[in-house]
Amino acid sequence: MRVCMIGTGYVGLVTGACLAEQGNHVWCVDIDEDKISRLNAGIVPIYEPGLEDIIKRNVSQGRLKFTTDTKEAVKNSFFVFIAVGTPPDGNGNADLKYVMQAAQNIGSWLEGYKIIAIKSTVPVGTTHKIKIIIAEELTKRGRTDIDFDVAFCPEFLKEGSAVDDFLSPDRIVIGTENDRTSAFLRELFSPYVQREPRILTMSITSAELTKYAANAMLATRISFMNELANFCETVGADIEEVRRGIGTDKRIGPAFLYAGVGYGGSCFPKDVKALIRSAKEKGKDLTILQAVEEVNINQKYNFLKKILKHFDDKITDKTFAIWGLSFKPHTDDIREAPAIEIIKELTKKGAKIRAFDPVAMDNTKPLFEDDPNVCFADDEYNALEGADALVLVTEWPQFRKPDWERVRELLAEPVVFDGRNQYDPGKMKQMGFEYFGVGRHQG
Image (cartoon, rainbow, N blue to C red):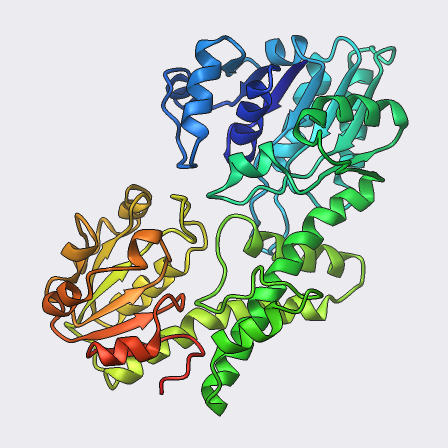
């Protein structure tokens, strides 16, 4: 099948590459000429395990093309996906200007029947607006004879495992207005769900809300556990024991029950805000989600309070080794990353930072290029040299089993602040470390 993917951000790039991997011919479109040139040369702008190999293979075999020519891509495709960004505006609403511009462009160049499918995360009702915009553009051209259908096909990709998530999805949601569109999209996506009937067809409105609801539910679990973790510290319970106690209940399950310094990334913060704002516009208050957002904002500052308390609020000229900068492991994405806010707050109070992340340092360095108190280390051990404490913020696998004797020798003080509860408090104490986790019983 022939596919046009408008937008080569995280969603568009992964989706386009994985569709090409199954034999489809895919045109990925972006207005950034430099980005398109680099992609055609096999240079991938994001870190995502397995993605680079798929892109290089499908470009070399002619199934995947990158272009700035939207007209040509739309002309040569049957499916046209919109996968542009919907960042939050100043009020927390989803900024739909890129989506609407893509819709106008499609209407300007449509010459025959196409299926227009939205991948971007958009508020309820947006797909209908896109249909109106395309129809208006066709009317301006005097081409009301051209037929097209719209659909909403949300993505459920986790950064760090997006390729696997696309190739082996839990489910595929298709929001459509008619059986014709549903049948075509089922045919496109059927290779990914051959073993089980995991394609769910529903109304466009339900599909739009499903995407927001999924992320909001996962964010709620995280904030709930973080709030419980804070209570554990008050009463002397251990959040890891509580997690195991409730996670083994099959009605609950273990996913997204890990306490820490809060969620970040390109989806959860943005989508929770957008859903809250979308509901307010309809006169509804989503009070649970408002609390979820508040807990998440406060959580990183609760972690900072532990650091400040240990040093009696005197951290001027103290040096902190920061392990992990991305918002989660296996990605270089630092959007809404807790580590960035923690570094900013520590340096405001006069602290020095030695930071290391396996893949996210290139994205982080521009944020602190004018701050002499922030430097970046060659590896995790180099970051420790002379530091007054280790602060783990992102749970990269290589940080899970460090050489603790070496860590103790390199640190000026054997102090560890574990923002992801990766280490056992009892063992840390036995090895001579002062240890501070999130909701952990210190013994």
